[in-house]
Length: 266
Image (cartoon, rainbow, N blue to C red):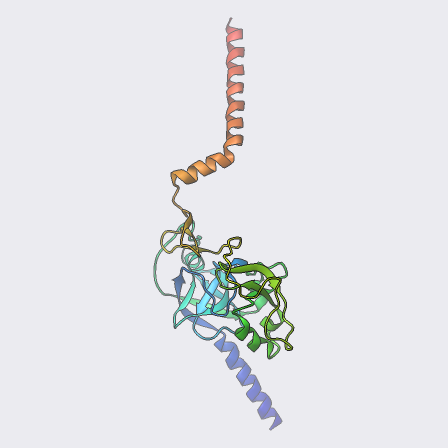
């Protein structure tokens, strides 16, 4: 019976392992969101998985592969059924280029996925200590479920006094949680105060155009692959000093050579 129980456990583990990989029909997703309150201003919003099923306290990192290309994605939002991924990630898998370079369009494409260790997504989390950034006012239900047992999120979270996933309200400050004594975080400012936050913007990449869009307002902040006169003027102004200096050097050199040639002819 002991052998049978051990065999059953191994079979269950193998089934779980098989369930953690396979094929999905991946579709592009333009606008960042997180159903558990992960803050977009502190993660790479171009590498997010918006998949069916509840966000897990352990399996928050997934690899997605297509035609020899692979990306790692943070699985921190729940879709209504589609296997959406950030438009830039989808575009790279399909074309080999960022959506800001060569944007393309399309629908569901069969791709291979695998749940991987959270460490594979470490470079997608941009907090100073590498911890998953959560909203202190709106992530507590999810966090409490992760703290109820030994989980990756429960060991690797950070709370911020920011109200929304696109970081447009609140204070960009770290909060503390005295769990399980308290179920509400303590922050330097009042928790959940809806003051406008403009120092931690979140950007989306617009489907089809590759334009970079401010998530809080929809304002276009860069034109993707399209070079406009304003972009050209900006590039010229940023490099103007060096270019003018280079032109002046060439001009002086040319005048000097011409003068020497005339002097020799005379």
